[in-house]
Amino acid sequence: MRATSYGKPTHVCYIKSMTAKTLKDALHRVEAWPQHAQDMLAELALEIDHELREGKYHATPAELAGIDRGLKAAREGRFATDDQVEAVIAKHRPA
Image 1 (cartoon, one colour):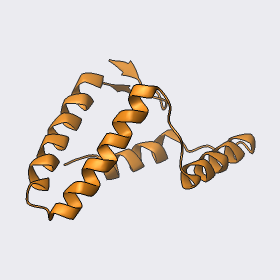
Image 2: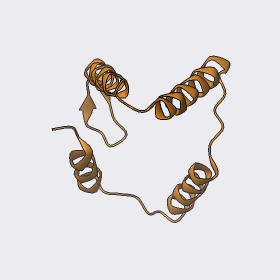
Image 3: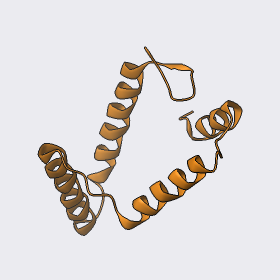
């Protein structure tokens, strides 16, 4: 168990197992996709794998803009409250 950035503990192994199950479920559904969609996913997965093996990650322009917005907000002292963070996490937490 470790503390998250907003101070509440999280079970890392639980999150990893949920991610693995979600990924397996998604890959099972991919088998029914049209071939061109499967090819696109395979290309993307191989690109991610290559970047992870190389130890490099190149953020997209949208990601860089988001980072810049976050840094600006931090400089201005604008931070989400613990309740706001928990609300966002609860909204996106799998049922």
